[in-house]
Length: 213
Ligand code: TMP
Image (cartoon, rainbow, N blue to C red):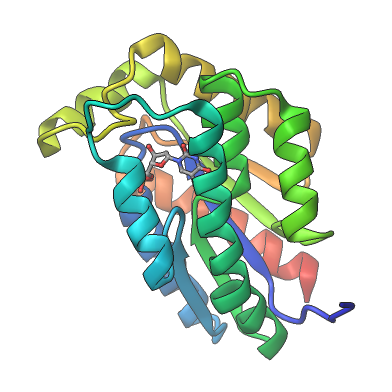
């Protein structure tokens, strides 16, 4: 099906403890100030089915989840999310701000678990066709500091329980992707105070809006 996407698709990425929730709220407010209607959603999740799959993925269970079972669950949630939320919004001209998307799969399942990028790309192409985010903001921090922040919040979920080396691979995968397309990816250093982070985010957003209008 050929469809014309009118809204813009922004994704927010990063390893653990980078402050995605606070920064997503800031981006939504900035877009509202600029009169841009925007749906804020997340992955895995964003639909009733997707949230159930999220619970399966984050739960700490005694049975280890196979890397490919994990990958397919993530893409099952994504298929539903694309069909029910993301594509309909973009087609209506509404912008979508998604807390994690397929770059997280390349970072966590690819970089973290070692699933080949080519396998991820097969599923990406199958489900997304040529749909890719218009702007991807990667919130970046060294994983040690990020994990210390997560620890303050309480118990670790199934991903957060991984070792530091896993998150170093996740971060490296994000940064390697960012280096391939400096137009689409913007890396924001979040090892700073909130005012500096938000001023950086605002600048990136304003530049993006100027570019696409
Ligand atoms: P969150 O903590 O940012 O809500 O994300 C939940 C976890 O899901 C996070 O640890 C990263 C993981 N995840 C993947 O491993 N692959 C993916 O494609 C996505 C979207 C998330």
